[in-house]
Image (cartoon, rainbow, N blue to C red; front, top):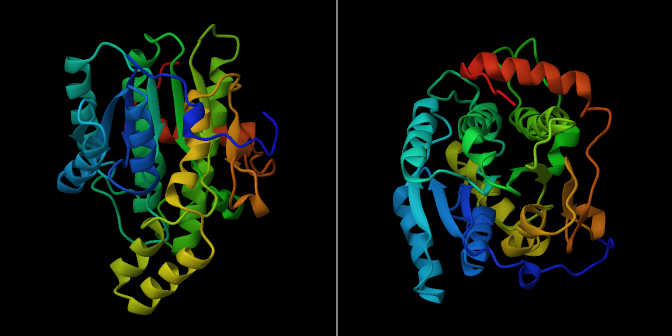
Length: 311
C-alpha cells in the first residue's frame, strides 16, 4: 500500500457471513468500526460495558440500514468474570470467530483498580483483552482467514513495562500507566505473531493506532477527576486539532479487512506527524517493542489472568 493511498470504508470488501467482535463498540472508534463492518454485511457483536449506550449505538446503525444484524452483548473488561461470561455465551452461540477487534480502552484516568486488583488502565486495555483473546482463541483458529486486531496508540512511545510495580502501587502516573498499557498491546501483538510463525496458523494478528481522533476517550479522565477545565480543554483541542472519529477507525478497519496485511503489521494515519490522514503502514518503537519484553509480558499476563494461552 502506498503511504499516501486514500483508503476508505468503500474499499472494505464484503463481510457477508463473517462473525465479528468489537470491544468498546458503543462510541468513538468502536462505534465507527462496528458500523462500517455491519454495513458491509458482517454479523457484528458490539461488546460493551454499558448496555444502554450500546443499544443506542446499535439503533444508530439500524436507522441507516434496518436489515443489518448488529447485536449488543455485555462485556466489562475490568472484570475477568465478565470476560469469562462473554466467552461462555459466545461459545454456546457460535462455533467460530472471523474477526476480533480489541478496541476498548481507558486513557489517563485517576488511580483505580479493577475488580481483580489490577491497575485499571493495564487491566482493561491489556489484561482484559489478553484474557478475551486467549479464551476465544479456539474459535478464532476454526475460521479460515481470521484476524485479530489490537488497537494501540502513539502513546506507546512513552511506555515502559514496570515489572517491579506492574499495578503502579508505589508512584502512579496516569499518562505513564496509559503508555504502558498501549505498549502492552503492541508487545502482545508481537509475541502472538512470533508464536504463529512456522506454526501453520492462517490467523493474522495486527495492530493499529488512530492518531489523534476526536472521541470521548480524551475527556474520561477529566470527568472522573471532576475537572471542568480539563474537560473543556480536551474538547477544544479535539475540535481544533483532532481528525474525526471515523477517520481514526480507518487504520483498524484496514488491518482487519485489507488484502496483503502481513503478520504482525502495524497501521496508523499516514499524514501530519502520524496524527491525521488515511491509513498507512507504521512502525512501533523498536527500543520498547522487543522480543525479550514481549515474552516476559506474555508470561506475566498468563500468571495474572490465570490462563494458559495455548498457541
